[in-house]
Image (tube, rainbow, N blue to C red; front, side, top):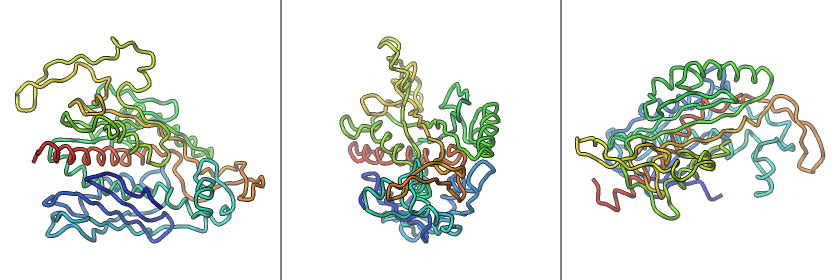
Length: 367
């Protein structure tokens, strides 16, 4: 099955299924000499793991990484980094009674259409549990980016019709995001989001929303002008995540009602990091990317996350033979995917940026 790798110079390959022995991720292209240990991976892995609060799935997985290669004497050695995660809390029997039924909203039917059979235990390769690999790889990417002043952060912008007020996305801190279990830096909106998620959970239902992501400190010049536009790679990266149904950056769909005079960001001189003036823009409706290349302004994007498809309430469906039937999904599932999505979205933003940073460095001879 192709399509298990992502990136060019910083390349990530994953394998594994949610109800198998575990997962493995191979990271190629990480430069040598980067200090790295399993402890460096744990903070983001803990933000992603199940069972962390009352509003997420209660599956108990510690997601402890085992670095098998690519690190020597506490530093990356320039070879492939191999990391293994062992599944410890699978309940495959929860899926036994639905192996011949298609779950609405899932990839069951399309997997059968493509391969002729499928792993019905939780979704196989389509399971969001695969993202444990991406988050681990991105923890390395984030560490490399941080060396060059680039920071990646995400949060929950909206759940259902509850929307956060974030005046300046580039000013949001990790402490603000992690201050509550829904990962929303607006405390008033966060309380309403938690109440809404708890309400739909009790109703055996689920709810969707929007996550906003920002990267600051990105230098101008990352990205390619044609097929490998930075915005194009970000869109592919985000849409490759489970449950993501839409992507926008900068002003996004709001540009549909604007005039050019309203949408254009005016260039102005700005103070640079070393005191030397730099060229910037007065506003950032372009979301930090012009012509598919980073402008030096914060990269800001948003993704829409659908409601969790697995519901314990009965739904109509059909069997593999096309016979009408009813299905109620057992097991442990998130009533809202947004709180655990945040580190996943950050991961894909970081992986795209580190790959394009390495490509830019190779092209320009930056060291």
